[in-house]
Amino acid sequence: MSAVKPLEAVARDRVGKGAARAVRRQGRVPAVVYGGGQPPQAISIDLVRARTLIYAGGFKTTLFEIEAGGRKTRAIPRDFQLDPVSGVPMHVDFLRVVAGQTVTVEVPVHFHNEDAAPGIKQKGGTLNIVLHTLPVDVAPDQIPDGIEVDLTGREIGDVIHVSDIALPAGVTYTGAATDPVANVVPPTVLGAEVEAEEAAIAEAQSSEAAEEKAEADAAEGDAEEKKED
Image (cartoon, rainbow, N blue to C red; front, top):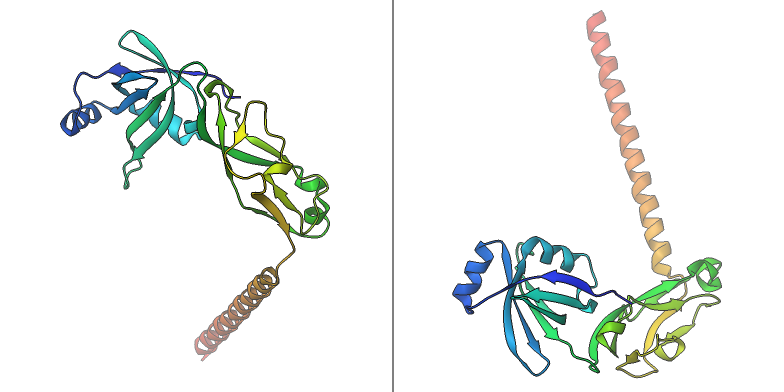
């Protein structure tokens, strides 16, 4: 499971669009911590730190201990906004967590042992991933880094359902156990067509190059004849 990460913040005494713009001009990102039966707390976090955490992946499944205004609060990111052009973080929402509470998070699915799947390794099949993440209910301090799926022995036509996966202790899938996570599909005709098209393009390029070389050689020969005349 992910370790609790410390996050330094600064308490804000002003909120609103104008106050948020002023915070951003200082190289910080406005944020709010809410929930847990307590009033919302307006804070700001360092822009570089926020951008690093968001783009490193797993941001929404990380439990943070936020220190601001002399208080430490455990919270998990629930949402964030990015500038649509620059991708710079504009705002972050944190959900305050308390003992005994569970949260719903999207946990990434990790597939292993493709080389041990005959349908993929020996028969040229492809793993078609239906769910890249699983929505689960879990205590904030027990959020797993990922859900592991072993592909050993999988053949073409096999379908992996949620019920086939051993979820970590304390983790509950919020959907149906029959939901498909992935399946192994046979090699497609499309793949052969793409290969044939690529071969035809390569042959055409080779032919064009040969024609250009012949034309260049002919032009060089004409130039030599004129010099001799």
